[in-house]
Length: 108
Image (cartoon, rainbow, N blue to C red; front, side, top):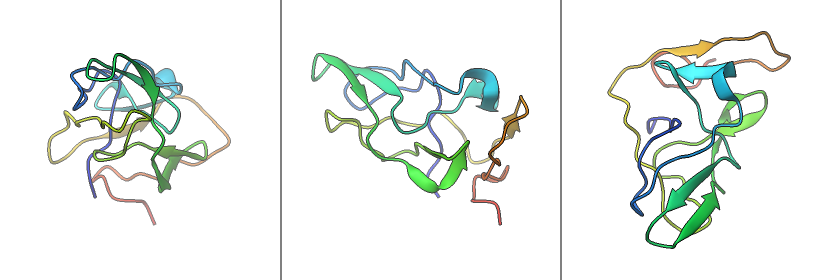
């Protein structure tokens, strides 16, 4: 499974992920997780674009998590700064379940 994208991760267009709507609700190694619809700036395409793709089998509050390789509306994608292992931390009670295990694979 490709690594999840987090707030501040770089993009292939020379920008950075600038929004993570879940905020500190769900973090990986202390940084907010990015879900479909969150945004990144892109220097190559001169704008701010939303992530159109996400892994709907790995979700926080029914929102698909953006993984490395998932595309922004401009066609670029983010590059994960995570290593081979990481910790997923839900930091607030919520209705939806956390469906990502600490190893980065979908929870069963």
